[in-house]
Amino acid sequence: MQKQKDIIVIGGGAAGFFAAINIAETHPKLSVAILERGKEGLQKVKISGGGRCNVTHAEFIPSELVQNYPRGAKELLGPFHTFMTGDTIAWFEERGVELKIEDDGRMFPVSNSSQTIIDCFLFEAKKHKVEVLYNHSVKSIKLCHAEPVEASQNNYNFKISTSQQEIETKKIVVATGSNPKIWKLLEDLGHTIVPPVPSLFTFDINDKRIKGIPGVVAQNVDVKVIGTDLFSEGPLLITHVGMSAPAILKLSAYGAVELAKLNYNFEIEINFIKQDFEDCLSQLKDSKQELAKKQIFGTAQFDLPKRLWRNLILASHISENERWADLNKEQLTALAEQLTQAIFQVTGKSTFKEEFVTAGGVDLKEINFKTFESKLIPNLFFAGEVINVDAVTGGFNFQNAWTGAYIVSQSISDK
Ligand SMILES: Cc1cc2nc3c(=O)[nH]c(=O)nc-3n(C[C@H](O)[C@H](O)[C@H](O)COP(=O)(O)OP(=O)(O)OC[C@H]3O[C@@H](n4cnc5c(N)ncnc54)[C@H](O)[C@@H]3O)c2cc1C
Image 1: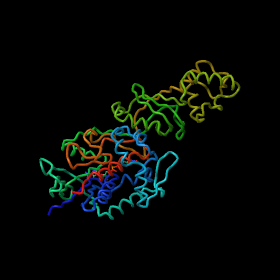
Image 2: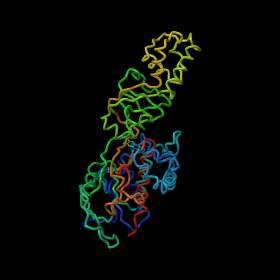
Image 3: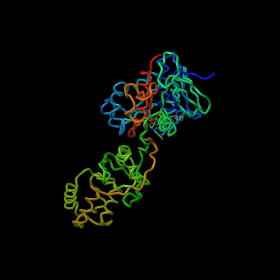
Image 4: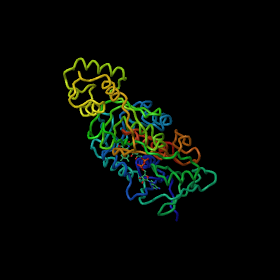
């Protein structure tokens, strides 16, 4: 006989497990199963946050929290009033997982291990009788009726084919992350898929000014992408192949679509000291007077790291042993330019290892954000990265998964 379930959750990742557990706990009479294509689930949770799982971010005001979502800010404002950071902390705490806040606001399990989150989910799924079917790759989703039928009539709305079997179900929660095959199936059902592009990546830059100084951090810089409105600020890290850290990662997220169109070849302008050119030049002139006899190399200004200061000096045609008094007007101007308007050519992107996500997915206009249900197909719900929501680094991507999944669990009726 064909297998039948009240609720099928497709995808055993962060959003899928969170949805299934909360549905089963809230509606104990409903039969709930997760279909996961892998032989294990929660693989991204496992590697997340460098193996520590950055579960959420200590930001407790919904209007502030949404600022971290280049796509989805407007739509998530309402949902965050229902379930956000504090609720996430409480949810895990009630199930024996304590979270801690780090200096930058990121929150991790106290154990510092993503396995704690996985163990919690597997335990809760078992406790609430969620059936987890591994090695079940979903191949097709078909509507059983031309018109949706009241679930209470004991009618099944969908037929799902997996690599193993066919299953009928009344409701589906799609939580497949950024999986192109499922997006294609959803497109066939009439949904619009915003084309996926990578978000959260670092910039490849081959430039003498940053050669040989990986690990150097400029604490607070402005970066803009020349020829666009894209701008960001924050710490900047020089890597072996280019630049990273929040100033760059935020640009990669907010500019995900635009930078893809530029094929990751563009120029950026960096202000390393967040001062305008004229102020900087005037300060350099003062230093020329005050530090006249000192070598410019040994007297880094503007709290810049010494090695970066050195490279910017060299780029300004100032040699190793020159003293402040020796600097001419052109050299001072060139140095002020390097400090406040340094241009770098970006030639590609690299993966940011801590966390990377995909922008794109189910068009937000086609989702009811009070329920996370499709506006086109009744009884079809979404949670997590499958929808066109993504965030900057810091635990916000998981918060989107928890919020959507929780709201789905509350909007599903007992019928
Ligand atoms: C290296 C790395 C580190 C990260 N670290 C963090 C972090 O610390 N904090 C943070 O907030 N975010 C982090 N992220 C982002 C975060 O992992 C994702 O936003 C989050 O996992 C999305 O959850 P999801 O459930 O929507 O998708 P996923 O976690 O990707 O889960 C989707 C599941 O669906 C399954 N699936 C796909 N297609 C099918 C199919 N056809 N049939 C059946 N099953 C299917 C997949 O196998 C998978 O198990 C990180 C991402 C990466 C890659």
